[in-house]
Image (tube, rainbow, N blue to C red; front, side):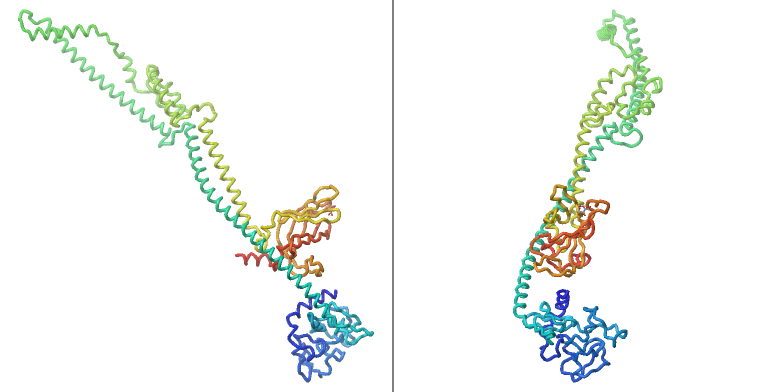
Length: 562
Ligand code: MAN
């Protein structure tokens, strides 16, 4: 108890130790209160200016000021001391005041060491409080014959040695921390590098993937027999059919005209042959006219040749068949051809069935070579009715799916990396360098393990297996208020980082295990102690160079890092 009080008071006064010479002041006055006592013939109560006392009333062992300021060097007003509430109020003041002592305590100058305030209740209590007042000045009355020698020489020397060691250890720990910060920065740089590399890779792969998709779509389209969509029903093949129908009609009209001309010419040939036949029968051979004789001879040769020529002539019925208008029962049934066929591919495959029989043989060969040409050029599936994919389509699909999977894989890696940059790794992202590393301690029947930003484990030494004591969730800050330990392996006082590990293995008949990992500055990673304050709720006290920096609230830290 006395040690804690001393530390609190010590911190208040360290900065003021050299301001005023103690000798010129009433006993027990601390440096920062000197101005109220120096060179005055009267004394005004510090907190009650209306009460003015004689100088002789200072330290006269009677509590005259309601705030105790007239007794800086005695225990007369110790009942006002907030550090000793157990002190009973004197009957004269009971019920009259709720004032506390305006002075923090009896000032012990501790020359050669560090001055500090001692609670008034310790003044002249017959005990040498060397841990607070190494010069023994608080026992000036020698109550019960007690004489407290001034021990500030050796105590101050030892304190400075320990303090020096502590400072050096802290400097070494701070250097280790700096190395961790450098490592963390490098690790972060690597993440940034991977993000930019992945972004570029995804860009390139997406273009490739999209090209492969377009190719796949194109081939699928083709395999379905849909040669790229054209205008109007039936696609390009529909257009082709329209053109074919028109062309067939044009050819039919031309054939019709040619037949008319043929008939005219045949009539004329017949007339001419009749004229020549009559000419041969009626000419007079006795006229020795050489020109006439040659003409008759030519006619006879022509007639003989015509009689010998038995050329198979096109049947008139066949020609008439061709000339007939297309319809349901003759010619090409274009309606049936265009409406009933399932697909363009079906149309091509069944084309011959729609033709008049006399054209089928001739067109069969031509159609076959057309089919082969269409398949080779990717305009017609090689086996549209089988239901299975062609090798070409299978390969295109495989290529696309591989590229698509690659893009998806890289995208998910990119998201992970981007999330990693947003994750809280603590001040200076210090835990980046520690992440994944573990530290453990042997304790009783267990070995306890802490894996930074991962898990805490309780490992049975009796072979009962490991128990997860929590999974890392967040970095928090909490106030520690513990006595300093001689070996320095303690949390001490002040704000400390606390790593929360939650949702560990379920506790029998209880909640899931969780662990609070309290951190304090140390030269090396070390679990100092593990406690289970309530069932399955653990506290680890851990030393680490990562904590050798003033702790900031996460919000302030985020602001600083912007
Ligand atoms: C085990 C350990 C203990 C815990 C009990 C709860 O023995 O994990 O720490 O308190 O289980 O049943």
